[in-house]
Image 1 (tube, rainbow, N blue to C red):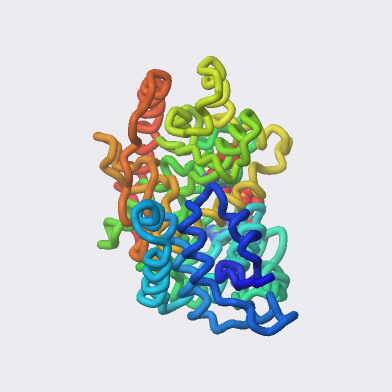
Image 2: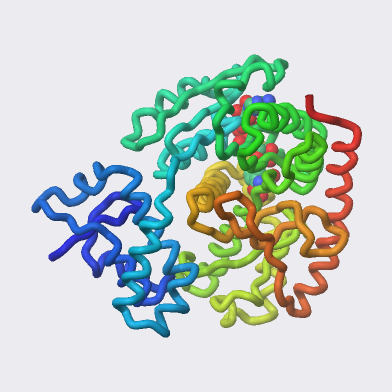
Length: 426
Ligand code: NAD
Ligand code: LMR
């Protein structure tokens, strides 16, 4: 049986294996076009090994063909003969060979989120260099996390960087941050039971400021993905400080992916559908009532009784607290957050490599009047945030919830804007 190498993971598959993996995500014609763009395994018995040792630029270039079926291929596949679709997929793949690979830094990389997030980013085929940055008081020295990760059979070269507590990141991060394309920041205090995310602002804003200020100096073109809470206030604060420094505040991205991950999982559990085929947009912000899942826009939710939606909505809003309480004072979501952060991180890198991806994120926005920062679907491309999409049609429940979300979000954005007014980057 013929096998071909999927450039996404370098492994060899039969057509049936590949088709069953992508079934439901892409139309048949698009999957066939992608199969055509995959390199056949020529030598018997060498299958996966051969694929994995292919020159990277070639392998990555072909991966582009997969973005095509998703973005445009689908519509075209219907109207055009198969051969033409295949030829187009190939031509496109050649034209858009990515020229580079990426350097990523995880600040707080030895923490609860930081360690698994660093691992997942080290496994991303788009990552060639990974910096793990943390304090000397972290639970594991960052050099240890880096040594550990450097043994994965992946291409990323991993290096740890440590800073003494109380020092200023700008004085200790030049090598760590220089050349970074993406900086993921989970550095900061997590909640304990009884706390709101807002309670973390005072301590975490200053931690974020030190790190983002260093990014402004050493990697001003990088995308800065802020995981640290409260996202609703920290992102406006850092984005406005970034702007004050004369930089593009669209580079500052608030990570709200975990809300989508949770909504997808809960819908899948309720409907019996695979979570792979559920994609709930969650808009607004990332705290309590500002977390607004739009179930009415999701085909998989059509079978859910309308009277069950308010509880489902509430479960998504309270999911962070569910984890905080279950951990009994020993932290908040770390593993699911690392999964979600890596999903966003990998989408951002795919975008930078020229393969557009859509993810919900909390960014500078004009989709809702009076809300300079808002979560909605964002198109990530070769310049980072390419387009911020409107929230789309809401049903009656969601319209009411939007008002509630906006009332809280307004106050939390203002907290961030005030911080930016009274501070500035070096
Ligand atoms: P943690 O305490 O386990 O890890 C935080 C790490 O940051 C520690 O290793 C600490 O040493 C490090 N750190 C602190 N100050 C630093 C600095 N100036 N420079 C470099 N590193 C520094 O906490 P965690 O569970 O990983 O959570 C981190 C943050 O992420 C919290 O604020 C939490 O609320 C937030 N969070 C956000 C989401 C989200 O959806 N956006 C989800 C979960 C957690
Ligand atoms: C989450 O949603 O899990 C995070 O924001 C952490 C928290 O404090 O709930």
